[in-house]
Image 1: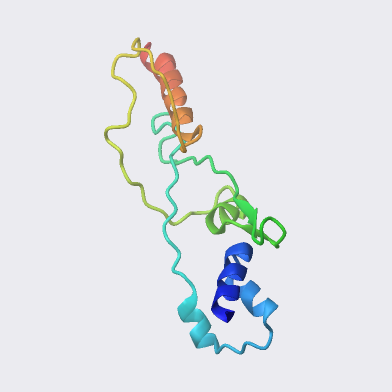
Image 2: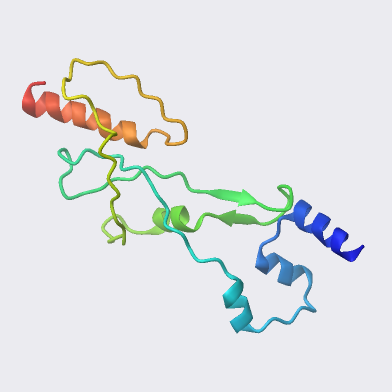
Length: 143
């Protein structure tokens, strides 16, 4: 009985560890155990939204700041770790990152070839870099 009630509560509330500890203050958890239960942060992958020729030595990102509520929309507001951090840093701050190439994802060599740009899940970011590159090519390469 208790297990079923717990599973229903967990499913309907979708609580974080902090919310569980707040809801059940009698639970005493050593900090060492708490730290072992926290998930490791995973890399966040973002599409580069700038042309490397228009902005050499720079990488621009277009990021939506994530925020959501647990408890069927009634719980506290949670914010995405990486997107929130990126929104708070200063423009000239160095961001630890790596670039993962996508050699098959590029503009056609011939600028006369029309492009249909569809971004399921990627948003506008990769296409911003494409139109910047097309503008750069027109302004500097005549094309």
